[in-house]
Length: 227
Ligand SMILES: NC(=O)c1ccc[n+]([C@@H]2O[C@H](COP(=O)([O-])OP(=O)(O)OC[C@H]3O[C@@H](n4cnc5c(N)ncnc54)[C@H](OP(=O)(O)O)[C@@H]3O)[C@@H](O)[C@H]2O)c1
Image 1 (tube, protein in one colour):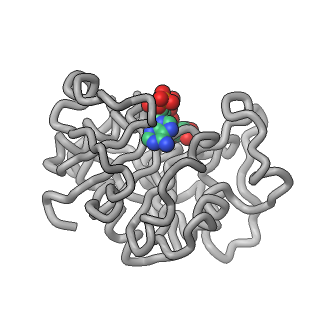
Image 2 (tube, rainbow, N blue to C red):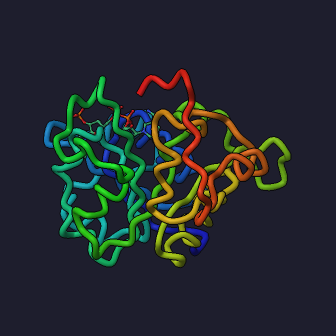
């Protein structure tokens, strides 16, 4: 990735604006698309993510962006313009929270990870699961330069090795150590209810906890997981 990349974000909520703040601070150009209810977002962005720009053309946001990040509630994610994602690098930062999202019929009874379900909405996009497992407040508080030994890690899971490299460089640029979390299917180990989800981990701690591709191990489930 170049030092200045074009980052498109769907969802100007808690995590979308946190990622926007980090990306603007790292020197990237950020455009954000809101919901149909958010036609006048710019004032909010000027306060929450100064430097980020509202887009009024969500249909072409992914085509204009080097990297596009999905940061809307899972139960609203079917509304996104998936056909415009073909050939583009798309980060699925979504989590499915039944208590918040309600029952999403598409996920009923599936054994796949949610990212595989989202990716099936446009298999021609270059899907990466990342940025979903750390809280927005942790993103704000824990971004650090690469030289800092207390730096936290963020996982990157994808079947597309170039997309994975690009997203890893983005994660590094915004202040976190990227960790290779395997394929998109392996992204299941980053979901709500797993041992990794919501934890602040260094790269070394993270790598020890990850179930590597090809491993026979089951995803580590946290006994007290709510989701
Ligand atoms: N919060 C976290 O710390 C965190 C961390 C990592 C990942 N995530 C995941 O990221 C997603 C968003 O979480 P959040 O906490 O940021 O939610 P949030 O604060 O509720 O924000 C979601 C935003 O998305 C907007 N939106 C809804 N439909 C849209 C559409 N079709 N196009 C563009 N924008 C749309 C919403 O607008 P309206 O208000 O008009 O509906 C709202 O501004 C969830 O899947 C969540 O699990 C959250």
